[in-house]
Image 1 (cartoon, rainbow, N blue to C red):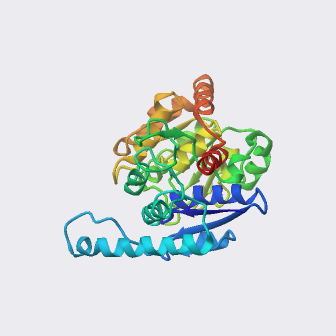
Image 2 (image 1 turned 180 degrees about the vertical axis):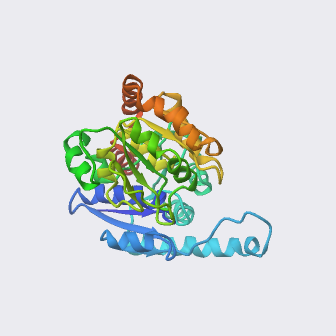
Image 3 (image 1 turned 90 degrees about the vertical axis):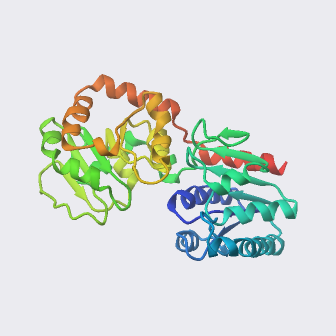
Length: 356
């Protein structure tokens, strides 16, 4: 029996690849005991138990960004978090720690090193987070989702994908997918989405150009996000949804995508070989632009800055792509070349190496 402690959480970008690896390890059968380390506040507190895993809790201790009261308290709080993880490691006789970034990972890396057990780092973004930058220095293995990620001894393993994406046969599921969204499987479909909360810039641009898309002979599947107040025009061929919980069917139904460029989004779209236009989220540390950079450099996607994405951009930049089948086919081929469907398998192989 090998006991694995998977550490990470806070956001879906950390939790989903963690759960994909947990499921891959659990599929091995009785020889794998999988535990998950996270905080009580993060998304993992809900998703991990829902998937049937025990969540071992550690204090949420953000790294200080400025010299204030929180910074003064950080050393003692971090030591406490490390002690909590060491107690979990001892209680459950953990053999290896795997970190996916987020608040739980940094104390997990330190605790693993002090306990004398190997740990592996997986970084989902092209710009690594602080916990993984620190952990990668002493890790037994460092796996990354994007080529060129600046971590020492990094190996490209890809993104551990949700099983429904990893196994998706788009052609075989197209008719079912089109019916799910009240669309025709015969007509080409543009999928536009901006994540679970939507993207105001994308929604505004499509609101001013959807008629042009339909007039070009395309259908439109537009996922606006829960917070959008965009009205559904009720036009045949335009499927407007606030939220889609079956993104596998959305991917199966579409022929081209316009979206933000979160790490999981870019990884899934490339793995499925779908041509895309990415509009990176402009706020933050610029990681979305970096996530999409490789796809753009290889000709699998086109990047358009957020500030430039308007209804006119849809007409001037997107519609010519929709009417050029050869260009789209070339982009799809490039996407399939750089896409990795075996991220879970590859990372588990790295974990096995750390245990050898």
